[in-house]
Image (cartoon, rainbow, N blue to C red):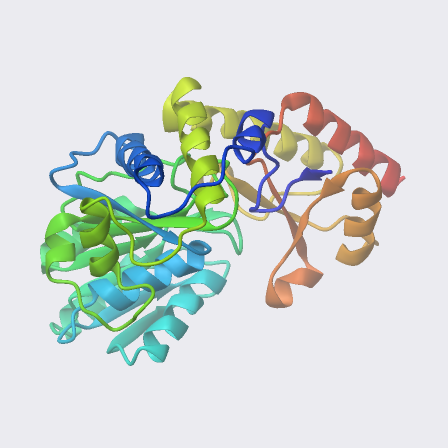
Length: 355
C-alpha cells in the first residue's frame, strides 16, 4: 500500500530495517548516543549554529511538539497572536485556551492566505503581544504561508514567531537567520521519512532560557536541559529514535532538504499535471502551494468515499478534505518512498475509476 496521505509516510527499506536494531535501556550510554546523534543531525538539517539553537526531542506526534512549544515559550506575562487559516491554526488556538494563555486570533477563511495588513493591525493595536504563532504549511489546503513577510512585521514590532513546521521541516525553506523566529516544531514521520512517535522543537537557546513551565510531560525547558546533559526525564520511544537517526542519515546522503524539496516538487508537479489533464484542478495556484501536499477538486460525479475506496483497492491511500471541504476536494502528498513510476500507476488508477 502506497501512502499518499500527509503522514505517516511509506518508509524506505533502509529506515524500516533500522527498527530491528537491539533493544536499549533509555538510561544507558548507548541510548544517549542515539539521542545525541538525532539532536545534532536535526540542528544540521538547516545548517544551524548549535551554540544558538537546540533540538529538543520528545515522544509524541507533531501536535505534542507544537503544544510543548506554545505552552513553554509564551511567558506567563506574554500574549500570543495566532494566525488561523486552516485546521492546524485553529488547533493552536485550542492549545492556548487549554493552558489559559492570553491570546488573540487573526482568523481567515481556510482558502485564504494570511492578510499581512490585518496581522500588522493586531500588532499595532495591542502592544502586549509578545509572540505570533503560524502554521508554515497549512495542510488543510496545501498552502505554504509566507514566513518571510510575517517575520519582517514581527521584527518591526519586537515580537517573536513560533512556527508550526510539522509538515514543512526538511523539505521547505525556513530562514532560521530571521531573528524573529524563536522556535519551529516538527515531527519525524513527515518530510524526514521517519516513523510516528518522535517529535521535536528546534528552539533558540535564548528562548529556552526564559521558558515558562505550564506543562509536565511536555515541559520544553526541562527536556532541553536534561538532553544537553545526555539525560532524559521519561522513557522515550527508542525505536522511533532509531528510525529518526537513520532517516536523517538518509536525508543527508540524498543531498539534504534542498534535494528533498526538488524531489517533492517534481512529483507534485507530475500529480498536478496528470490530474489537470483528467479534469481535476488544483485548489491553489502552484506559487501558493507547498511541494509537500496539494489539494484537488473531486472528479465530477464521484464523492470522496467512493474515490478513496476505489484507489485503496488499487494500492493507494489518499486523504480527504477537512471539515466542509470534504465534499469539495481531496489531498495527495508526495512524502515518503514515492517515485515517478508510482505516480504513473496512480494516474492510471484514476483513469480506471473515472472511466
